[in-house]
Image 1 (cartoon, rainbow, N blue to C red):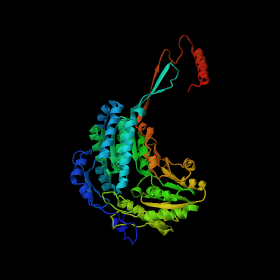
Image 2: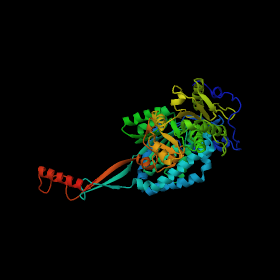
Image 3: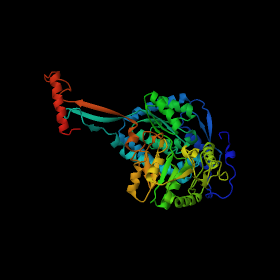
Image 4: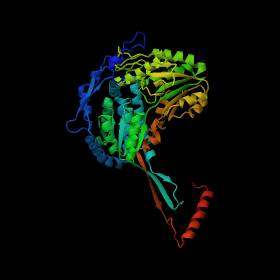
Length: 543
């Protein structure tokens, strides 16, 4: 379907479907005027007379912005500027760096309407789902603003010889982080991941997706207003296969969020240079509804799990595993809630779901649904594009009778589509949930919280939510978040989320005597003394 146009994919809707949300008086063109685009574009590192590229507003299909494109040479310049700024930044006390994050937190909450407009204009998502990004970034800013000093402070470690050896573990910044962020959560996955890197004393060269670069540039502008040195955060824009490798080529560490296919390439390029990388990649996430679940709560949770940001969320649910004894009742409640979701693209609160971001996402979603239906799947709700609302709208869709040979069963759709499967035992449900090569997020619903945690511990995913879709685990910013298997490497949030941007350094100071024959001992006598000492240390339970 790669040759299809938006008009060809968005065939006429047959009638009854999800209701339209009331439209707002404000338009995308009014919220994102050329003057704002010009102001933000100044933050792009692009020298000379750069090529320009147009982005499209998903809600209307109209031109949104015309942005300068960086070249590989510009990427090199960006790293040079960032390295010069990083030296002075790293020399500052951690608390002074962290104070910038706390000021940014306050500015973000105060001026959130500005960025909510940008997020909606660039992604097409509903305003409530855009607000989730503000929440996530504010929580990360507060957390690392308050805890960076504790994560990064020197820590006393046991020395080689008690009393005689003084050992300290120190944390040093990596240098300049190459940060490649995607289009689907442009605020959270650009600045949200950059904040701990800055707190740890690094500079960042960020390549956001061109479609959502304005949001990243706005965040950079706000962080500079909060006190971040302007050269410390460089933004380069360009075609992924051209600019992405250039970022990896110069980076001291790589932070990447995107597809598993591209993540493998990033990992190989980073490994060839012996630099580390954290990769948050794709998923085919499962939600388990156990026999004792509160079905109303589970149905409401499934709506959030499957259709937030029109399903364009790495940790959203695409597989619903429901105990056979409650499957029909659950599906009835879930379908009713899904059919009632209000679709719309107004720059205001009120819509329950917005648009897909592009014709490419619409094509994939449409293909998965149409191929599944042709092969025997049943559409329980949705199933149609909605060109009456905008060029890339697609109804929230529930599929039943999905079988393994259907693409929607195993491939990531990254759209508002979920498939329902029935199970008889917990063993069967856990096996089904773990049956994909992915391992990013999962969800378990039960009235018995101990049972829920027991089932959760058996799921091979980086995060598991009990009686919530994804927000509970993701919002617990003191705890790590990331994927297993084909869903990636490394973690954001918590200690791992900031320590990944540092190098561990051990400083050991020896006192009174060397760890070598001395005081007249020959080699054999030294070995005997050390042997006795090792036995004594074990008996005294030294670590």
